[in-house]
Length: 203
Image (cartoon, rainbow, N blue to C red; front, side):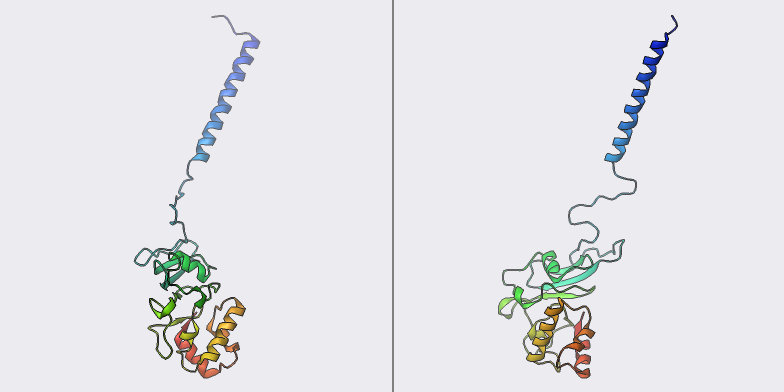
């Protein structure tokens, strides 16, 4: 076998380097296309923070900042859902399938902020199917401060229609309330009334 000339050695060396570069680029591209070690792919609606219907898993997300909300009343799919922190009442309604055909959307403050453990009740027109409790009738559980209606507030001892309307106006001006203690600023609410509100309302 004849010894290789200097030119041939240079050509073979250049070809070998080119092959190595192409191989390295191919390996890097394959790694980028693949999932990272330990990565998790989520189907639509299963991302961390997405709500799960009543009876489903409510395992806390890694961030620990999700809100667990009970949506009831005139929505298409009532239940317990997980929503991201900072969500509003309108987000809870949409997460529960959106308003039903008889929903009275103007009866609640859709812009109100949500708090963990809150119940959002969307009233129905005509007083049926999850509508507000009639005046003088006590609800089954605490009333949601973020979605309470005038009729629901009127059932609380010491709260009449005028004070109930003042509370709704105050809530709308603030863009929602995060604490029952804020109601102390509403005209017509004294210490005794505040105690009744703490007993019957939830954030």
